Length: 519
Ligand code: ADP
Figure 1 (cartoon, rainbow, N blue to C red):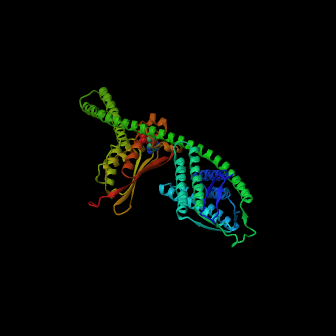
Figure 2: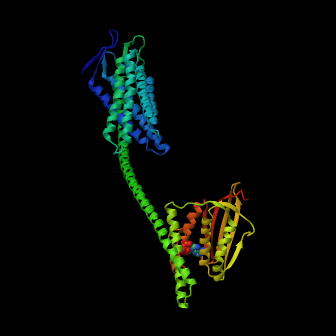
């Protein structure tokens, strides 16, 4: 069936006709191969493992290379002329190898981690070069033929191959990046564009060719491949290989789609969680602000009450009233301590707590706290052991009030949870560099200790490691939390070791700035 004729310059050039059925078949082959190769290229992006990646890359290159190659020879078969075209086997094989290797390189390029416009342009150019080189090497495989090319159509064939390949890759990447599920339609469209790159190049390349039969000069060799039947078998084999890859890559696409769906769901869930967390954090911050303001407001009238109680204590009272007033004094003091703790914690949480840095002596700060605590230690008949050089001085720049607050909490707990035995206070220091001095402060006691199971709860807010201790020893469970926050605010860390029934050692370690002026 002769459809249209190409006029290839006057005699003795070869003129021929295109069989449109074979032209169509060549286009289908090119689209088919492109579809599979582009699906594989998309898959390569999510493939992990070197072996896995290499086998998919090889598969993609094989299909694409075979596709271009088969298209070319079907296209050649479609060209019907009075000359029986024969091919040189080694150059024919070479054209196939070129198509596979160049396709592999192009697929590798587009499957790299970052997809940018320049990588698409470059990948498309590589793919175009793969098609062009295959075609012209395939043309050179023809035996007994003198071929020259018309420059304008020759250049146009290259431009078509490159531009259409770039457009196809751009569509593929767009499909891959699309937020909604992977689209077969978009993938199909990119395959059609790639098919156009291959076929458009081929037929324009053919139109560019001026072929003159030179059979007399170059007698045909025995091993030459004849167009027609052998090529038909090769075409069947190629289609079979492509079909296998189509099945493999379509199952892969299904996985890709379900992965994409799962991924979308996870992203939606993550956004929901982030929003919920932000809401919770805002609510928590609002609560901290409220607490900070309220405890400040309550403290003022409470201080007035405490002041009045102390005035009352000093007035002439009978024994019974004195006892009542004394109870009131103790309770209001506990209430004030509690309030101060809540105020501190909410200030820390609302990030309103600031440090007031001044020069101080760590040893002096410790002595002051011990002076305040000694009566309580004496009341419980505990032995106080001082394990540091009291005559020594550790001059630093820090916030003395906050340091003493942490010291007080640790010593206060040691006294509270120890009924007999000792309380040992140890201070050690180490120069870190010429500006920092690392001071470690330890309070060891022979008290009730903490069960290993409860270690993790010790620094938790509002948590007392053992609920019965609330009833027995009182307290709010805030002291250690505040101490931890303050220590960290001062740039240090806090910790403890403990053994149930034997005792505990609570410590903090802070790298203080050395006060060089007074040093
Ligand atoms: P509280 O106001 O309850 O003392 P803290 O935050 O200071 O709150 O302490 C939390 C809990 O850690 C205490 O209730 C207690 O169970 C445990 N704890 C703290 N220090 C000691 C210690 N020296 N010996 C035994 N248990 C301790």
